[in-house]
Amino acid sequence: MMYTAILPAAGSGTRMKANKNKLLLELGGKPVFIHTLEVFEADPACRSIWLAVKPEEQRIMEEEIKRFGLKKVYGLTGGGKERQDSVRACLEAIPACEVVLVHDAARPFIRQGTIRRLAETAAQEGAAIAAVKVKDTIKKAENGLVSETVDRDSLWMIQTPQAFRYSLLLEATRSANEDGFLGTDESMLTERLGYPVRIVESSYENIKITTPDDLIYGKAILEQRRQ
Ligand code: C5P
Image (cartoon, rainbow, N blue to C red; front, side, top):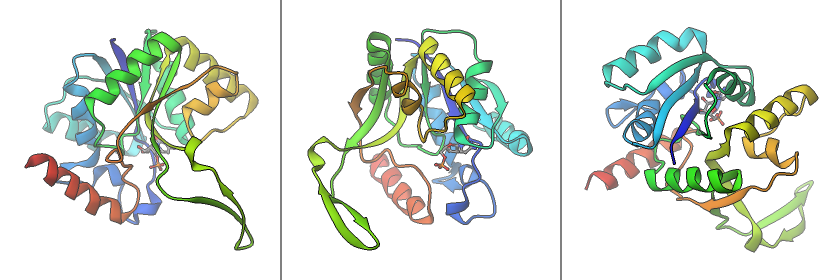
């Protein structure tokens, strides 16, 4: 199933405590976001990649894309204040297509197999999101005191990619924008309109580079993959 990829890359990355966008930090000789782009570049099912970037970072990102010989990045769109705004800007800019797949540029270890399963499931069912099972025991607490232990059998940690029929995500995104609804992922926008969302089991390696520790885990994943 051919798909169009939207990669939000316009975050500020304050939790990384670096003096620049964490996506421009080097990981195994390449900026973080280049690793992510390379996965989509190598996937024959990926028609084109649309990147949401901060206007002041557009030039440096374009230079890096050129330096690493990437050819599938069609559009760089100005990112918004929130991640949801960045995705919406891309979605409004891309040509109509059957399936659109949204993936954090900060998740460089996504596997092509997961992407394929998501795109195929979204084409059949409307929406599909990558997730892994919760490993730890989960409790709710109020003022530091445990109030409840949650049954973890039905709990999933949600990642990206999240894949959708283009028309469905466009409807959900426009509706959220009109209602001033802010979600923490794209799936929430379609859920609130009552559309079913299918979970596709992903990998614990699909981490989001967020804090300095993640660069250490990231280097370990890269080394292990190179063996
Ligand atoms: O901040 P966080 O890592 O959770 O953001 C997830 C992804 O969304 C990152 O790739 C980041 O660059 C992107 N983002 C964006 N626009 C924002 C905030 C985050 O494109 N306003």
